[in-house]
Length: 58
Ligand SMILES: [Zn+2]
Image (cartoon, rainbow, N blue to C red; front, side):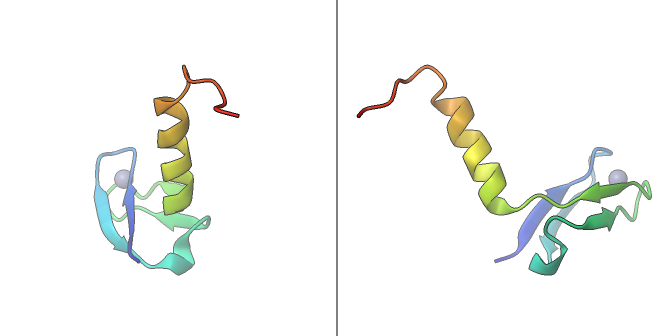
């Protein structure tokens, strides 16, 4: 599954190889080194932000 990585400069990379997940990736535009987040991390983050007001159903 390709990873979508967006640099802080706004440049998007829509097919970052999985091997770059969690590793420094140098943006070709601004030359900034950033760690590529894993898709799971992004998903978890989204869930947490969505459900902050909900209590545990158990
Ligand atoms: Zn950049």
